Image 1 (spheres, rainbow, N blue to C red):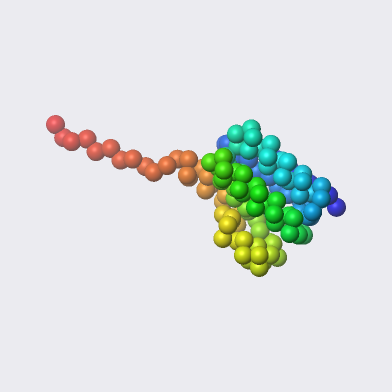
Image 2: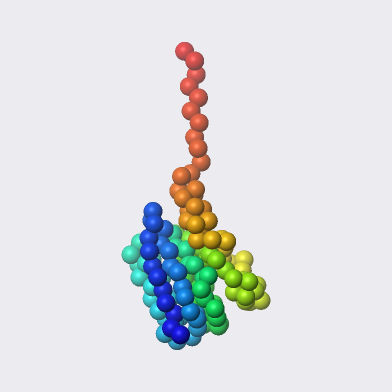
Length: 129
């Protein structure tokens, strides 16, 4: 089964929902190409939803690392969402989990970007005259 990538954008956050196998070959190449195109077009906030990825191999993990590296090199951030227990375990075994920012859901990841954009609240206290 080929890897399906559904791409959408919401408030400047690019969401990539993957479905299928993230493995060596056309699947990992297609994912890399999608991320390369986003980054080269100026995208700096990317969420990769892995809820429907049922298998990943070392080439798939490598493509995630490369996507993270390229996004970071452009001053952006890439988050992984909806990691199933098996996917999370694979990242832990490969000692890659600390490399990625992970969120339980896609909406949590988007909300995290939204809060970062807002920045800290600035209180204004005018001195009485």
